[in-house]
Length: 255
Image (cartoon, rainbow, N blue to C red; front, side, top):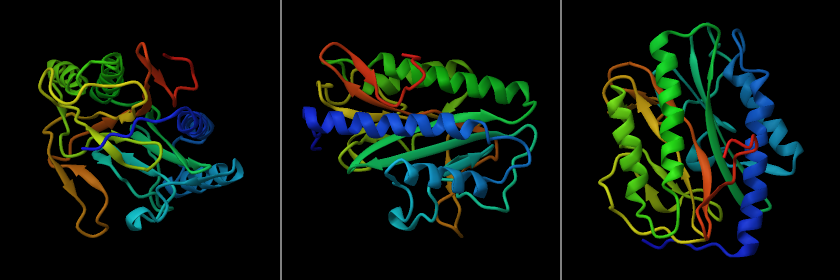
């Protein structure tokens, strides 16, 4: 494992790209509603990204055909936007965006609820956001990376949910996917120690039912829960600072 410690110039660039990614999710929120197609949302996200001098990182990444991932209900991640997929009352929706601005990457995602969602769906969404918060609170120099996943999995399972282990967070900034791998279910005090200048995503995927994943055999991307039960995800890009953390994609001052 070769973990890149970012220098000041790199951190400044990644901070700007991450800010744009965060602003992109705020922009798209007004359009995420019943009757709208995911293809239309992707078009808006693509245009906003380009108009702000950036490139959508997912577009043509290993053959992925769209400018963002939009994952609905039982889709865990990597949902492909389409004009044929229409948001419905009761849906829970993850929108995942990654910007490349001046060569630097910023990666974030969040959940949206459409109309009236079930109590179970709302509990899952709320618990998943709390899982992200618990993971972020573990970020500080000297702490083991595994404690992020330990905190997340301990809470998620206590709420009656499961943690996806087949996808994980990752180093980011100079490349789309870098070391280290950030597992969202991990043993306490496992993994390398965090150091100032590390930048990575924390992006827990929490399932209503079983943790397993099934990837669509036709499109090769869409990852669904194996039991067709709901899944939720939140994601931020995090910088390890000298004293703790900076959430680079947080433009709402939540942290």
